[in-house]
Length: 109
Length: 114
Image (cartoon, rainbow over all chains, first blue to last red):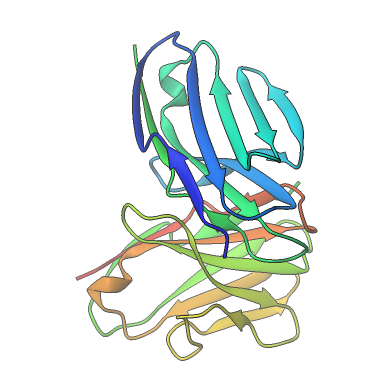
């Protein structure tokens, strides 16, 4: 079974700072997802990656398949970015997603 | 894309009772997934709800405790039976249109068992 590790577990940043959240996994994958969970519990999908890099607004996600590692970057962070960010991987086909424990981000104005 | 409506959003339940959570999707999907997220933990898959067949349960979850219905391609229910405080969690439904594509989650149902 794939093991997914995220770091850091908790992160506090000042508004405007550049933020990086890391995700490592143990077994080769077909896809990696970055998710955002707000305090009420709802989850939004940010990115799905199988290789390379994706960018959406102030968010950038990268993946290194050889190193089994992905990063989520937030540029010019804002208090509304405060949430839990979760990394999830799928090993192959329709196998279930395996989730990391999440990184709790607080951005202070 | 998909919009998922999940209810109840929050409930406080008495020990020993059962609660049914509903998940409604605004488009037809083949597979719907039910997850549990215990406090401070990551999401754990309970089962995959297949239309027209029995749900497929993950190790550690059984049908008697978490019966699931999937009467059509846009709706599913999860019942948490004979609840105990250990069942206090967020329960989320999720859909994906095919492997590796964007995944969608409901807003979650936050259950507290007292």
